[in-house]
Image (tube, rainbow, N blue to C red; front, side, top):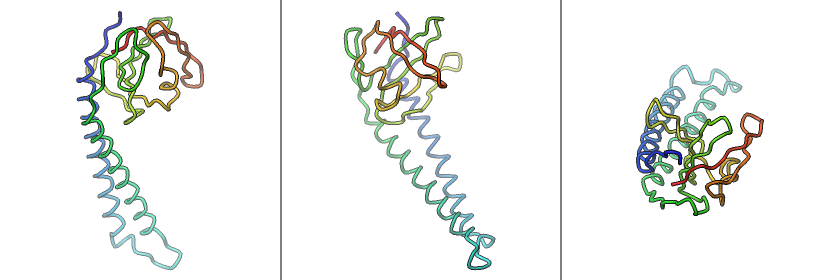
Length: 166
C-alpha cells in the first residue's frame, strides 16, 4: 500500500501556506491603496481614471485577503475523519492515486482552499487540495481503494488507480 503523509501535518502545512498568502495579499492591498491615494494618481482631467482604477484594484486585493482569512479560519476548524480502504472517498479524505507508470499523486479532498499545493518535504511530491466540485474531486468522490478514475490533465485524460486513502 502507498504511504500517505500524516493528515495533521498536511493541515498544518496548508495553514502555513494560507498564512503566507494572506500576508502577501494584505501587502499588495496596502500597496495598491497607497498607490490610489498618491499624488500621481490624481486625475489630470475628467477622462483620467488612474486613481479610480487603482482604488478598484486595492479593493479587489483587500477582498482576496478577506477570502483567504476566511479559508484559514475554516482550515483551523478542520477535524477530518479517518478513512479506511472500504470507505467511499468523501470530504477530508487524503487519497493516493497512481498512473500505470507508477507516477503517484496525493489529493486532499476539502471544501476550502481548492487548488492549493502543499509541500511537506522538498524531496516528496506535493499534496494537492481539491474541492468536490473540481474535475478531480468529482472523479474521486464515492470511489474506493482499487477503483480506477479518469482525470483530464492538461487537456488529456489520464487514468489513475486509487491505491490508498486515509
